[in-house]
Image (cartoon, rainbow over all chains, first blue to last red):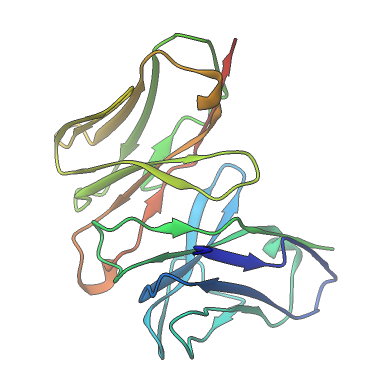
Length: 114
Length: 115
């Protein structure tokens, strides 16, 4: 049981490039989400999904796309990277997304946009 | 103004000290309160969870919620060097509707416990 895994661990992009951050979980969790963590800002929700085929926007969705074709995977796409997207990105999952459940976080992807 | 405010520290204490970490919030709809611990270059992990007002104790950790003052605290007794980490408070309103499962985090407090 690997929990929540994220790839890559670290990535450098140039402004305007696109990339996909991968997230997978093997706990059969319905709820998955993406956060970004910036100094002095805590974690902020980007997008979330309550099941395959269902996604919704969080607090800071601009510049990011998501889709959920399987229960296990929830990739985050940057279509045209900007320096403001330099951050540490965390994927999280929980069983069904109700507030009382524990959310399990992945180890993070550090992204630097030049 | 942020919905959740947390003193970023850093906080440095000697081993064995009692540590007090705090958050204030402005959204009276928050009902669920959590503390996460995050070691350097790792993802956050849930440490304590409380619903509504009151205290909850788990070993050396005690979480307190005062909804009338919109103030939550985490106390660590007999602090250890292994407690050195960033501590994040997080909150959520009732499950359901647009608040479904979403957490609002504080900025995190960096704690160092030195031997």
